[in-house]
Length: 381
Image 1 (cartoon, rainbow, N blue to C red):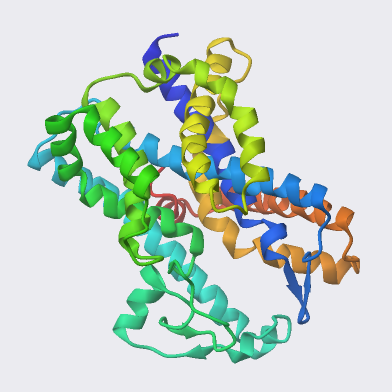
Image 2 (image 1 turned 180 degrees about the vertical axis):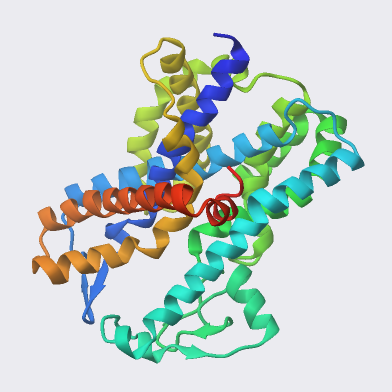
């Protein structure tokens, strides 16, 4: 198995477990709880359950999106030189693979809320009748790109405060939004890598680690983009310099021994002010660990790429937020569950699992019976 094949299979394999990690982050009951008939469940969890959920949903899951950005940066410049013509070609391709599904999935999320507001359904959803509809072009833009619950088409009067980090109406699609913004900046990334070489990546990383975003307004969009520009630039640097991602990561394989103790230490310090100084290095260690471990397991034939799971990852990622919390409410209402630690642990495992299964079923159904719609929603993947 050549290095190129190992890298390709590593990227394919990582897509699905990374998507599961993102879903676990969004199903973080220790932080979110579940609201049923005006009562919030899952707010008084024991320490052992908070530790478990924090480990998987806040610490381990936090590696997933940065890993996707590293891979995106690597693939954007993969096996090609870069000039104005190629840049335009890549933008056209990303419009089909990113922008079109981005708009469609946000439209679906908007329609889903509007359907819930219909009289026949509204009684099943807490506070749904309190949502106000205010239409304008700027509110339409905010709904799809930069909403905070007060500035979009749908206004939520019962919100205590607007979101610190504005999101599209299909929340997880912020990743696609930010990726598209960074792709627009790729000529600058290419120029910086060519001029400053590795020092550009190191300098940006040191800036984020030492200074961070403390001089930028909290939740400002620039602060969000800078974080993920760093990870995108790691992949871009390797690809621009024709370096194989897995080969280069394996040169750092000994840092993987720090992964488990660093993960535990992050959980224990997650509420402390100094956590940011260990969290950032942990993300880098985690990315290296995931890529190195998966590549070795693939090379030794201990694991294998499942093409269906790899290909459905984007679809499930975009789909899951539409049903994730509603499944938890159905469990409570249908099974009359009590608010106990074991119940919340069961829901923590069951809700993401069922969400993924439903997403996979919808994915296979549309692929079989509505291939044109499926292709648009999945970006032609």
